[in-house]
Image 1 (cartoon, rainbow, N blue to C red):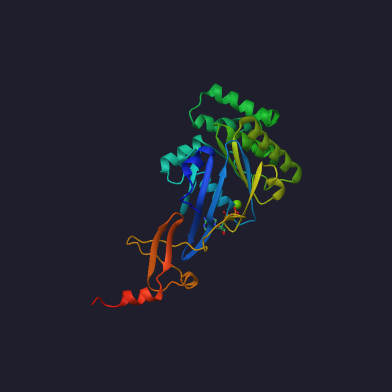
Image 2: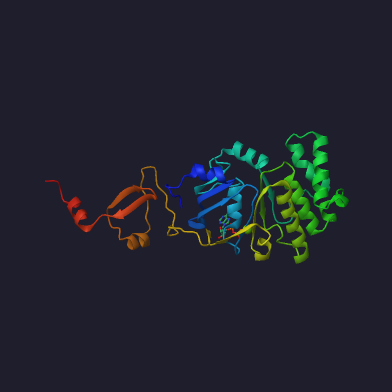
Length: 297
Ligand SMILES: Nc1ncnc2c1ncn2[C@@H]1O[C@H](COP(=O)(O)OP(=O)(O)O)[C@@H](O)[C@H]1O
Ligand SMILES: [Mg+2]
């Protein structure tokens, strides 16, 4: 919930990432799917945060917003105090390229390239000199225990090796924020542990802020802090939404669903009041409503 009394500038100074009242509605024809219903949280610089929740709870949606791969319907994400959600296409691309590293579920390496070339590729695309790119790739592969596999292609490496290589790729351009989506989703328990240890090492050695989403509570435990998401909301978070999102048209008209009108006792007229919490819409008391309906004498 956006609390107008809270000093966002002050909060943004203390945290790497601040998420406020984040909502995402997908439209499928006439049907709306509310994937995020007003998510609030903060992440400290250098923190390793897990977000755990069942399938369909909104984890991937949240991660896409954090990585500026998609835009929220409402709410905001501040990165170093700057809004990510309002970036234009070019700035979104720069943010993704310079600030963020992504690790997805298996399969995000280029199949035809060796581990080494997969890691140097993003650096080359960003214009890094070959020598520097090669040195950094060697260093990253070494840290991930992949030096002996440097000249193997993805299909010549195990699932765990692929994911550790994917971590190197994500780290190539020295991101400040590492985003992981079910990165161990297709691995067995033992390999999962190795990959999660590798991710933890990244966080500790480079001080990279990590946000990792998973449905697996055991995987979530590798983090400094765990948030639980369910039905598009962080568990335990105070929220005041009824779960409905409504649009305001160009003339300022808004549709308030009938159930909410009934719940709130709203009839034909309402009183609008700006409060420190937002806009308060309250029913006009019956007496007033009657008065206002009378013709002016
Ligand atoms: N592109 C999309 N179009 C329509 N609905 C979507 C889309 N992406 C996700 N959803 C819906 O949003 C909800 C959250 O999905 P998602 O963020 O993928 O959850 P999770 O990653 O936790 O499994 C689900 O109900 C899903 O069906
Ligand atoms: Mg997902």
